[in-house]
Image 1 (tube, helix red, strand yellow):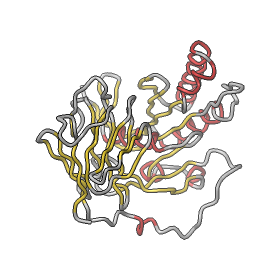
Image 2 (image 1 turned 180 degrees about the vertical axis):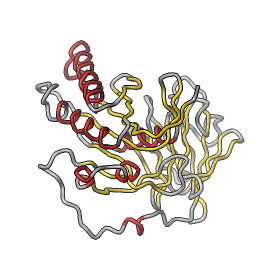
Image 3 (image 1 turned 30 degrees about the horizontal axis):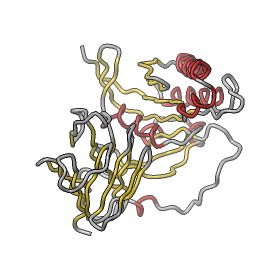
Length: 301
């Protein structure tokens, strides 16, 4: 039976686990990641949370209150990124955390909904040793934590119109970069009226103010579904970020861009700006006439 409720949703994952395996070797790295997961689980349970699932080096958890989520996040960061409980000499070890608060659907020991998606998006935006969250969390915080959050950016979220305010939760008082108090976030909302049109084998999608992000990959959940043995399930995405259109790769084999001007670009686990028109290839270089080519064109700027 479905159960709708409001919860804080938190994701935390180990940053740079590939480099960790290279530095420590498979067995030591596996044990280190397992220790990190144990710390995350303990911090969750100590602050009234529930671990929903672990996926490789990542944990997903829910909490009844926003303060519980940030208290657990702070404990995770201190234990792992500061080395209080888990540390590895000679190898970098850090985690990143993202969370959101809002309605979720609880079903068969799992949770679903836009709150889960937004929390996951905050995690993907976070840097090592950082906790990122949203105005939904901030609105439900008590006085102590509310004094320890600051807005740092605006981020596009799939399915949401416009950008979402992104806040950093300051879990340590030292070594904090000061921010100018005069940033006007309203003035930094997307001003572009342009649109990025993507076409693949007769299917067309448009990235713009109405839909700020589309995903590309072999999974049926993507807006553009491209099959192939070099293509990841969620391979990459094209998103509108303020006045730019960015291609963000999340794949194993990378994404290739060939512009009509003749430039060839390669991006893997990184992003690149799309301008003009050309073709995108997932996992390999493609030419305009290829049946694997995703054609893109920037319109209206």
